[in-house]
Image (tube, rainbow, N blue to C red):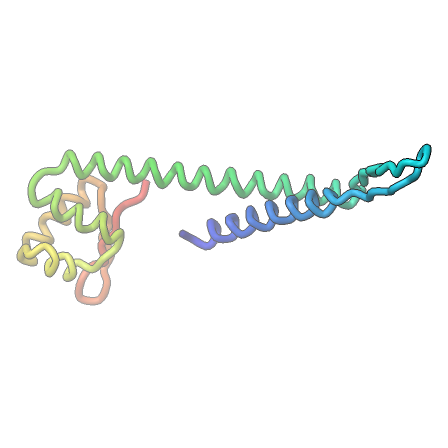
Length: 154
């Protein structure tokens, strides 16, 4: 989760809490008891929302809706990415698939870690990564004496 997602989740929570607080704070009504014909009668008087409360409800609804839509769209994009990545993993064969699965599990790792985890020789890992890079599935960036490998996001 990146910082924007966290901010939107916090905004959504604050908006929902604020709206609930305003609604429940006004849910308490005044009750007056009067005597009519010798019998006590309870009269419930509902309170109206102030202009400030109505504006707050509208503002918090707008903020909450915006945050919810942002989070929903972001999650659906992540779901689309993961479907594409799983499809790519199914299309690959043999050692390419095995190496790509290792990269998918970690999202980002060093090439020397892939050599260790896969059990493949360094040269083979390099060749497989070149093939995956040509297929636009992974991204390689120099990192000291090795490369940092990450799943390519489209």
